[in-house]
Image (cartoon, rainbow, N blue to C red; front, top):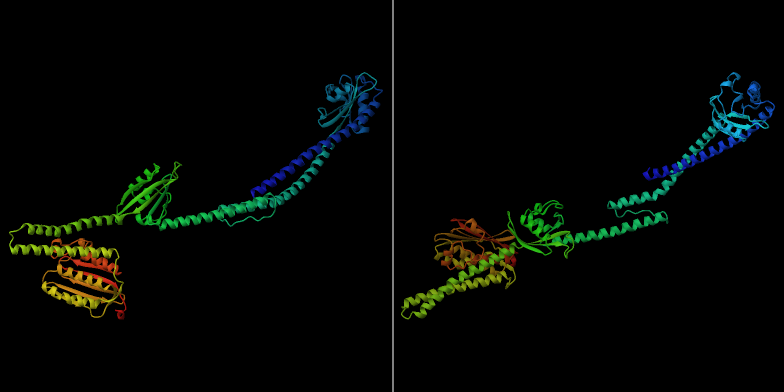
Length: 592
């Protein structure tokens, strides 16, 4: 049973009890008044009869015995207490007081009923008698035709009290029956009245708990029915708004997680509201981040300072932030408070742009410009110097002139090779390919290249061996693959001392075709292995220039292999040689 139902039942019960109590009090009062009026009328008749009997007896002390005997006879005849009082209030006779005690009875002149009778009217009073010790109803009338004197009659109220008590019992029984009936009626009425309210409460609780499909049954068209309709409409509107909000949130989350930039949102108190997946990947963030401070999440005091600065100004704040740790990253972070335009700030959003690759490419560009300028300066300076010498040297001998021209020619060739390699590298990086990938017999191509280079190997005092037992066909561009193999074999020739050995092998497993060029040359240190494929990077710069190398051969190899959807790797130990491996996708053997 609900509290409201109990309250309604208590209210009904209280009303019933109040009505019964008021009705009983009024009924008892009316009954008492009617009974007292009836008793008064009866007593007045009895008093008049006693007065008629005492009309001939003087009301003096000398006739006390006669008057007392008259009072006793009157009580025996009428059944009421009779008291005869003279004009001074002295009791001359009383049917309830023995004659010997009459002299000790107190004066009755101040008794209310006696006082009224002495004034010439009928007096009544209800009180407990001090003489007999019981509750009595008194009525007194004056004597007629003489100087003073009062006849007073009295009756006990026990019968009246008993009647009134009986009426009270009947009224209590009736009240109890009425109260039980009222409770039953109140329970039924409250149950049926509060049933729609209970359904509304359950529906409202379900809606508050997130069940927006909950509805209230429409049982009437009164005010409660109107409230039920309003609750159902409210639930439908909330469902629509929640769905729209959820879809908007999902779209926003999808957009944020699809961004290449990291996003960090904090509230006005400086607590994190949202981070997207990209920022989690940048800083290795795991778990729930809501409510935490930015310093706990990104662990970077520079970012914390940036957010505080953005929160204190209307303008956007931008700063370059370097992430320290195992993986060094460089970010361009833009932070701005929201909303803008002077309204109270509710938060700050920061966007992290990963410019690590941009910074690396910028460094590579600067290095390339510096290296290219350095590489070009040497042959240009040599050509210019010897050309000026020839122009000004009229007394040069033929042998000197010949030597100078050979030097100019050699540096011109080197300059041409350098420019050619730069153009090739530019073409490769710009994806300006001249042919599509096609099936190429790598084993046959390697055999041709090794055969064409045997004289060069012999001139350097190197031994060369080819291992290509079966046809190995790969997806490649023949001209580009030929340049790759030529650059690798040239690299092996340049960095292998006389008496060394170069091995070329071609293997295939049906999925990949691998070409390995191994030498017993000077090898490459682990620190240099990460940079050998960079442009103009040389392990032994003096030896490379002496051999006529441009420093671009391995960079060209790397870009050509990547352009053919392959990969190139290096294994090397200082003074023990190097092995360059080129892996390409295998093609059907009969497609070459």
